[in-house]
Structure formats: C-alpha cells, structure tokens
Amino acid sequence: MKIIVDEKKGTFTIVPMTEAEETKISAVLSVLTPDQVLDYQGRSRDPENTKYVQAHFHIGGAKKKVRETKGNITFIGSKMEGGIELTLQGTSDDDKNEVGGIRDVCFFGAAGLIFIESTEVDGKKSMVVTAKKCKHCGANMISLSSCEWSTCSACAEKCEHVYVEGMVHGGGLDIGVGLFCEKCGRGKPKEPGEREKTVIEQHLDAEKKLGVHVVYKDGPPVNPEQAVQFNRMARGYAKSKARSAAKA
Ligand SMILES: [Zn+2]
Ligand SMILES: [Zn+2]
Image (cartoon, rainbow, N blue to C red; front, side, top):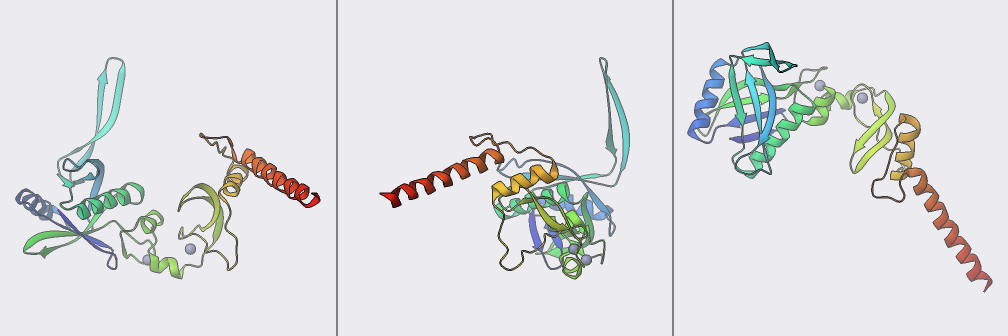
C-alpha cells in the first residue's frame, strides 16, 4: 500500500498497490460510512522487512466477552465477532515508515483511524482517513502531539495556556521537570536568555518534585546527587591546582 500523508488536511490516503490489496480496500470501503472508526488491533513485524511493522485494524462487528478455562486458570477477554480485518503494510520503505507512524499515533494518541471518504488515486479506489478530531474545532489530526492532547496545532496557537509543572520527556531528555500547558499539552517556550537546565539538574528536580529515584546503571556516579558531588570535587581540585600554580 502507498500511504499519502497530507499534514495540512490532517489525513492519510491509503492506496492499494497489489491486486489482493485492491480487493481488500474495496471490500472495506463497501462497509465503511463516514466517521466510522477502524479499531486499532495491534502490530506485527513486516514480513518483507522486519525493521518495519504492519498495523492491524478491525472494522464493524461486535465485541464479545469470552471466557476460557485451562486447568485452574480462567482467562477472561474479548473477541471481535463479524466485521472485516484490515492490515496496513507499506510497499516502499517510505510507505513502511508511514505505517510505523500510523501505528504510533493509534497506540499512543488515538483508538484507531477515522474514515473520511473514498477517493481515486491512479485509477485505484483508495481510502482517506484521519487519526483523531480536535476536541475544540473538530479539525482532522494525524500528528502524535496533537492526538495525544486532542488539540490541533491551530487551536494550540490560540490557546490561553495554563502552564503547570510536571514530568517532561523527549528531545534527548529521559525524564525531567518542566512547564507545559494543561489544556493543549504544548511545552512552555523558553524566555529569552533563560538558561537550559542541565541533565543532572533535570534529574534532581524529578527526584525532588516527582518523588522518583533516578539511578544510573552504568555509574559511578550512580545517581544525580553523586554526580553533583563529583562535579564539586572536580571543580575544587581545579581551583586548588590553580592556587598552587599561582604560588609557585
Ligand atoms: Zn482545533
Ligand atoms: Zn495551551
């Protein structure tokens, strides 16, 4: 399948590339109605290139509770009955990459994909979907940060941010404390001239304010407190060396 991404419209267009895919997409399109959800059902390795994934979806049908007893253990779960399964698999490496992106958005920020409309690409019946609708304006969204907070970028720009302090991650930082808006989820931009906290300061803050313990597995230093101590010792040593050099 070819995946066409339209950031502006907030849509993915899924174009079948093989005959089997064409049959599948046509079957799926024949049951879908606008705004219907394609439930995300998990991923598996792409058989053509295990660096990538396939993403699985289920359309229609009903969820049924199932109970199964093996020995003295009873498994309770649910199973879909009826409906159609759809597996997204990219054709080119770019498409495979996009399928990975779709999977991440569905897993972290949405429950699945939302059907918008059918279209035709290169004479093939294709499917236009989005991941989520903005809770403020209803715009289609496909980016992870927008979907995670159900707020599109345009609404985030208009948001009268209410910044709260809490756990932040990403951009090379594993865990730290920072300010982000509790309404749109976007981080507070740095003030001009504001100094960036060091990683050790971020870790100390996380321990103090979030009550977590940060442990460095490949230490010493084994934790941020010890790292501060080491830095102090190193500075003290450099100073005393400078003093004795001045005396000589
Ligand atoms: Zn919006
Ligand atoms: Zn905001």
